[in-house]
Length: 431
Image (cartoon, rainbow, N blue to C red; front, side, top):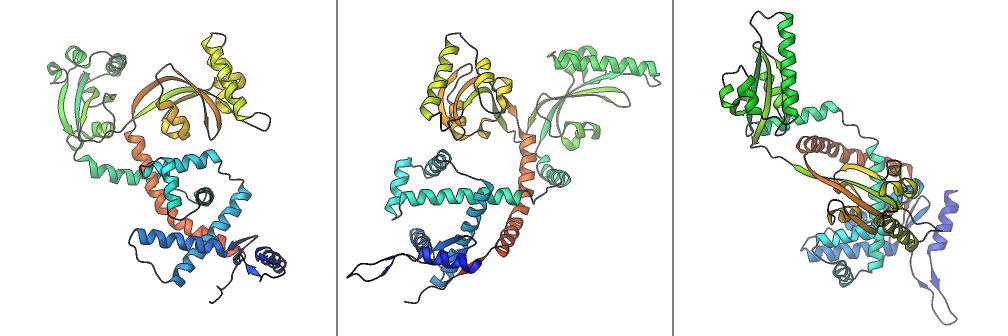
């Protein structure tokens, strides 16, 4: 069967032009067979040409043509394998996703898309071919990530161990400004005394969480020596605090209230009044609703856009609410909750959706726009800043560990994939 496939592929790829007086002319030839696909000599030549152009532009030395061709063949064989796997997995890169990627590439080079396109053409490359090569790279990346990700497990303990190391490296520079309230109980306290003190301490915590002034409550209720200073303990490094406090305070954001904590003297309540020396990362989150309409064979882009504009007209006229229309017409899981997307970092959305949110004010509606998922209208309900330091540190630790494993596992997966494939490379004709 392999030989039949091989014969068909060879016959279909050796394209000739003949006429009564014309000589046969070879337009292309097969450089390699990869399962049910082929790598053409023209693809090899194009990639070699592009690499040499880039090397010349960057004053970079290259290996011999023979060594370079081996690397180019390896890449094109891998691309062919991954493209075939992508087709079987149903992975597709839409024109909208491709355009967004090219826009991002242009933006990174501080160019408009038109300038970026001209730059590609000036370097002697067809923009249409360049565009499709980017699509292939996106598919290959998605196939690789999907296949390798399933093979990688990062144990929670590894994340915690790395976080501990990262914290130890940064802890010495961090100081916390603390407030302390002590609800005392007698030295020979009975169970009744303990219960009464715990009840009072719990009530104090409730009052503080409701916004009561910490210093005022400390002066009124605290049995600590710093009560008249409003419970102010001053600035302390994590290593200067009592161990019981440090374990609960470490890595907490400003205004955190901890307690009641039972000690030998009573129940302690601690507030983080301020922090210095620690890099705090604040992330702006948005709370939004959307209505999504996906174009189809029977619903064109223009009709989807008009439909959403009609919804906006109804909302503005008071004929319907955004939530009602979302429940009735929106596609996707959020339709059940009236299009509610909850609080989220807008950077996690589709780029077009992120850009739309960035241009909006609280309470506004966005006119219909297109993303890679379809057509949307948005209602921005609110914005807020949240301290994402702890979550970002945990994400960073996970990503560091994941990346450590990914490189090796990716190479292992690709080798296994190639070992299982039918690959035949044809020698280049000598000239």
